[in-house]
Length: 391
Ligand SMILES: Cc1cc2nc3c(=O)[nH]c(=O)nc-3n(C[C@H](O)[C@H](O)[C@H](O)COP(=O)(O)O)c2cc1C
Image (cartoon, rainbow, N blue to C red; front, side, top):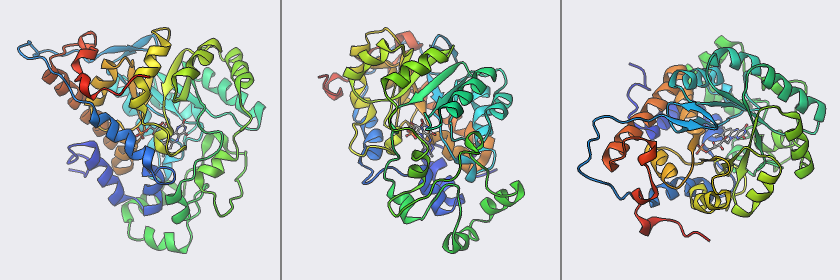
């Protein structure tokens, strides 16, 4: 039995990843910006919501399936994009893409993934896949990325709009964590105590590259910059509504806008042709002090008024969050770190374990609140005294 088979919840997978990885890498995955207020609050906000369960309902059969962005999904769950993760487990992106396909849920590939668009399309096979796009300084390069994604069967483009510059991630600065990953003497010494991890990297022939942006060149870092800033340097901070409209006109498929945090932005985004709104604060890695995502969910659902699907990520560590999100009007939740912890601890088996845990918890929660399918998950299942105030 591997360490992931013993993991009974996502926190146990996180701990397995922490034990396997050198500190700098674990902290890059796990950490947030500045004082990590938003990172913590994302998770706490889910637990502030309480249920108001029904009793005496036949819950012997539960249907977890739902529609996401006009297509079928076996769960109200999407894999959120996570860049640079192959330094934890070579092949982590492929493992997660495969796990998503096997679980029957959509998968999102990051622009800064450590696997190519084409390799992921192969691993994800008949699965539903979306491509997350950062708008880079180099417009032709950005356009080519989107074209490759479309050619490789990615049905939706996820435009991330909460990273005009990299957040100030102080764990990375403390650990002297840089991208491309170049461990100094202290990190090499530490890596010697993480033999499983080191062996995996050696067997792979070294650290994997950010496959889709190879050729853009490494950024030079100053004292206050970290990995996030180095990727941030490749991004175009001037990206605005005009750039958005341009991408909309070029992309033939569905376009999702990721990183929305306030209701009054949604009107503009829908006017510009967004097909879905993805509420996110980048897992607390960008603006520290941004609101917990679930605290703004009801406001945004109200503003969108059913015109397009609303999705939400940040701090989802329990299957019950899927029930809470659906009750508040989201179509699905998206999760970044849960499968990342799993894959870092145990590759494909770890990513699958994360999805199994969340599926089991969702099933059990639906039985316990008396909801037999997604239609029966309604707002009254949440104790109204615990709802965030709608503005
Ligand atoms: C290690 C790591 C890398 C990430 N890379 C990206 C990225 O390349 N593009 C992006 O839009 N979001 C990225 N995110 C943010 C996630 O897509 C998502 O918004 C966040 O992880 C959700 O919070 P959760 O980890 O609590 O589920 C990253 C998150 C992590 C933890």
